[in-house]
Image (spheres, one colour):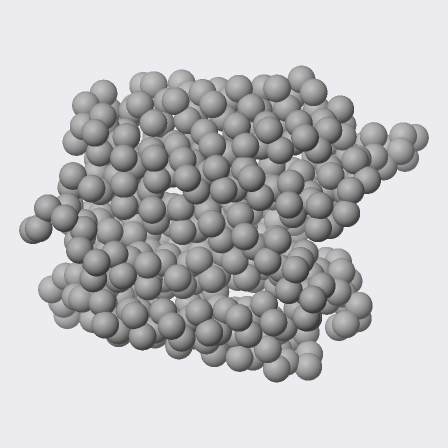
Length: 461
């Protein structure tokens, strides 16, 4: 293997990454269009949330089969299939006169994103020389972080100057460019094999993840012991137990549950999930805090989130360089400490955060997150045998979506509980709910610091 990342390889990574970039960009951009969509389609707030919730559910069902798809079909065919689904979804989104068709288009986009997200990381893990692996994994994380950074501002500007459909019109041009560059640059990653598809294992994983995500999502609107919450959670757990039984002794399992017996892998995966839960919870809280507590506008909320997201993207690349030279332990622990300092100060000042304080503390937290997040994934995957990387990659990317749903549900539930106290103003109740969330997240990040100190290897792999 060449010891350099060639321009063609970099183009392949960016082409596959464009699917995940556009998927996340459209998700975060459409969030700021919710009030417009509610009026245009005459729908409720609960209904409009499905524009993004549905995408998360579709991704969660597609990513687990990525490792087996890569064995049966050529890499270029997988990429072009993802592009086709994504563009088809965009076309439906652009021309739809009805909300149900908009949901259909978003579902097709979810399929494309679910194909593109693990494909990008598989290309990096398979083709990038080990001496540059940390940096390129950081670039992969930076691609998705850039989408998070640009999404709210992009969506607000496009909706204000044109209309919400232009979000998808612009995306379709970028997707077509990606199709051409990917066709040129993406090469085969592995030898194809004649493997039988594990329908039972896939169905039980998909059903389990969907019901668990629905359970945590419903937690923001229903009490824990309601059928919508505890019922979904129990069904999800039961389905995953069936998957474990079906897969445990299968040497060609879709995803082997035996991977979780590797403590270094499992504990770093858990830290990865806690970091994602915390980040999505903060991403949910601060736009509401800026508008409800500080009386700012929607566009101001988007701009306030932008510096932190940009710093996250830059620190992800820097952490990758540091990982390549010093190993994963240093960027992970430094990043976790930085995030912890930010979240502790948020907890102390939670009732009185000015917009400037939000910018500074979110940047401190998000910079630390950028340092540790991709490094946790890189370190966790390299703790597995090489032939298990595709399955490990699928696990990380699937649980990333699941953790996002948990984080949003956690923040939404705590704020909703506080706002149910009608004896105080909505602004004060929102600030109290935000402080409760900061305290819970502080506990998660402290646990992350303890676990990473114990389980992240002291030496380079």
